[in-house]
Every structure is written in C-alpha cells, then in structure tokens.
Length: 318
Length: 318
Image (cartoon, rainbow over all chains, first blue to last red):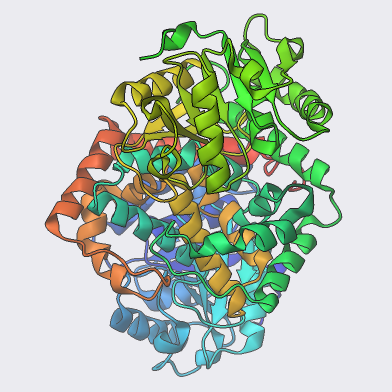
C-alpha cells in the first residue's frame, strides 16, 4: 500500500497543532522522527513549541529514541509543503465533519501517492469523512487518547472505502512508533474506549443531576476503588477474579441475574449462552494459563505498586 | 451512639469469612485490631487462615500497624460469642436478602448495645435489610471493594431507620482503620462506584454480544487508555483537563451536544444549566486552586509513575 514499510518511516506530517495534534508532534519527535507540522492559526508555531518544551521532561522520563530532538520539528508554511515529503500523515483538526472531509481531500491531493493518512477524530466514522477524497483507500482513523505522547492506546479503523492494507499498514506503523493498537473490524460510533468512558460519564452525570453523588464522590469512587486495578488489569479480567476460583463462568452463572438490577441507567443485553461463552472464553484467553492464585497475586502486587507510585503508601496522599 | 469512640476501637468482629469477609479480617488484623471471626462453613477457619497467610506479604508491603499480627485472629464457635465483646461488627454473608435480614437481626440481638453493625452488601439497601432487627438504628452499609485489604474505598450509607449518628460513627471508624470513605446521604441501588462500573460493564457486554469488540479489546482499551489516568485522577477531573485552559466549563459548553451521540447505549441526562454548573463547580472544588498547567503536570507525572510501576517503561510489558 504505502511506498515505505511501516518500520522504515522517518518523516511524519502532523496537520493541526492543538492539544491533540501537538501531543502527536511531541510523541513522534520523542520517538526520533522528523516531524513537519502545519496549522492555520497565526500563533500555532509558538504554542506548539511551548507544548513540546513542556512535554519534553516527561518524554525524557519515558525514554527518548536515538537521535530524538525537538529541533527535528519543522513548521510548514502551507499544507502542501507539510505533506510533500511525508511518509505518514496524522490529521488532528477540530472536530467538525465538513472541515475534516475537505481537509482529508486536500491532504489526499497533496500527499505522495500511497502514503497513509490517519485522522485523530474521536467520533466520526471514516465512511462519512472520506466521501470527497480522490483516493479514499488510504484514509484511516487513528484515534489517540490525551495526551498522545503518554497514553499508549490508538484505535485504528477504516471506512467502507478504505483499503484493508491501509488499516494494516497504519496498525503496524503505530506499533513501530511505540503505541498500543486496537484494530477494529468495523466502524462503531465512539470506537471502543470512548464508548466505555461515555457510559461511565453519562451515569455519573445522571447521579450529579439527581443529587445522588457529588463530582468529588464520583472521582473518589474511581481513584480509591476500581481505578486502582484498571491501570493494569481491565474490567473483564477484574470481574473474572471476582468470581473466585470459578472465574468468569462462576461470575456470569451466579451473578448474571444482577444484570437486571437497577444498578445503572443502562439496560443490559440478554445474557444468553453465546454471550456467556464469548465472555468466558475471552477471559480464559486473557488469563493465558495463569491460575486464579497467580492472577490474584498479580492484581495485589499491581495495586500495591500503583498505590506506591501515586504516593499513597509513603507520606500523604497526592 | 456507639459506646467506643471510632478511633479507640480495638476489637472487631467479622461475620462471614469468604473472599470479602476474609479480606476484611486481613485488613483489620494488618491495622492492629483484635479480630474475632465467625462463619458457619465447616472448613471456614482453615480457609480464612490460608487467606490471611496469603495476603500478609502484601500487607507487610503496605505497612503494618504497631503490634499487628495474624495471631490476633480468634475463630468464635458461635455468632453470639463472636460479637460478645466487639466494638464494631462487619457482616459479609452471602448476597441473599432474607439471609442478611435474619443475620443482621441476630447480630443486633447479640452485640453489645450501641455497637455499630455494618453490612458489606454490594447491592441491597439497608432499608430492606433492617426490617426485622430490634434496634435498626445502628445498622449501616459499609460496602468495600475486593480485596478489602488493598482497595481503600468503602461506601457508607444508612437505611430509613438508621440513626444519622451511626452513619457518622461508621465513617469515622473506617477512616481511622485506614479506609477511604464516601458517605452517601441517600440509598441508591449499587451505591456509586458499582453504578459506574456496571454502566461500563453493560456497555462492554453489548459490544461483545454484537461482535463489535472482543473481551481482550475491551480490557486493552482501558489498561492502555483511560485506566492509566483513573488510578489517581477521576473521570470528572480528567474530562475537565480535556477542556484545556477552559476546563470543564469549556468541555460542557462545547462538547455537550456530543451527549446526544450514539457513543454508548446509555441515554444521557439533559445537560441543563443546573447540571452544567454542578459539574463545573465540583471540578473547580476538586482542582482546589491548582492551575490547568499544574493539573496537566500532575497527570503526566502520574501516568509516567503508573507506567513505570506496572513495568511498562523498563523492559517488556507485564
């Protein structure tokens, strides 16, 4: 698909240099890429360089790639010049459908043939954004989390007119660039992580709206509770451990009826045999041969490590 | 209310010694209490001592209280003997309403007058559990998270017939015993943290049921994404930072309409002025004078610390 193999890319273009675009610039610089940025705002370059300077100490702690330097950032005067030599393009323009549609078409017209162009959109399906581009096959979604230079996750998904090879190339490129990639087979509004966040966020808003909990209660309930586990063990495997030795199968078979409890305003799906088996099998794959006792020991050590790392073991709470 | 001031309690009774009850036993032992446990299962004592032994290395890492020892656990032959001298009682029986209702009435009949009795229930309102107790005023919910010896959160709430002073006493006692307490003013099915967890869990089940994501995708989307922040900064303050310098006010005023997006199957509340202000004010209180730049720096350092603590900076991922 793209003329450059994913792991050989050296030159990246970042289009849009706000919080997300600038975060991408910082990430790619830290990973040792040459980055060309473009943003139409008059003060874009000064703001971007401030963002990179502010992020650099964090990036040094994370570990810089050989030769990585903020000096390898070039601000391009035009969109066309920004992408002229790019081997990969990351678009992070404001979240407006018309704007992204036109911008992606312009990028497609200006970028070298075959170069993959990814959009940071947090919500629009690529199918809706690629409608006016001349060669939509190379347009993918590469949805990061804020800040892109610290949070590893990128969700990669194509639109109806995206080539499968472009999706695969983007996933390989992001992995090579140090990200954790989830490749989705189909477009889903909000992708995966934002759907989960959004469900939690909406339930929280309902509670605040009804005077059932304060904003502080909600944050405390996560940081002092499940959030301590979720930094290293996801909600599915965490729930499997709540089933004790019987794991997720015991959990679903015995506590499945609580899905009908009014414990959130979100209606649960029917817990039929197929769903039950899919969840149990997934947890078995995730456990990957580790016993219940091993998983419990890992969880316990993980929570202790996270408590210590966030200053909650020695001295006052942060 | 209770004859003993919350910070002077030395003797605790734990009724029910399964995963949660046993976890409470381990926690109270590590905090230096004398613990008397009772559980009707024939192999309860052996299992409980194994649980405490397995947890002890973790508790040593967390830091033991002066004089803390597994030897300060006594197994009582009867419920009445377990609570005869107790200054606080924690009930962690199986999650069955009739059983808990009868058990709490028995505990109320056997425990010294005025001693607070807390239930670990993860779902039943105390109003429904305190119906047959002679002195229901001292019965409260003290809902922990698994494992109680590691996860700090306890949600405290009374029923309609609970004395306000019992709720306050329980909150102070748990704080003195090293827990992080949320005191709720009213009964809400699932309390707070479980409602948030449950919303996320149900959205995850919908995605698995529809083939939109695998179990592994869901766990990865949290551990490599928002979960890294939630170990030390809750979802509300995290979202406030996504609003940049403008904070939660900017976030709600500009991205509020996305609440109508189909990004989860949970319907959002109406984002009226009162809700908007409640969320903005709560985030301002949570920020407690810290600037946007300070909060960003804290978040960044927190993510780095969590990544390092969970083995994701040096060497292979855990």
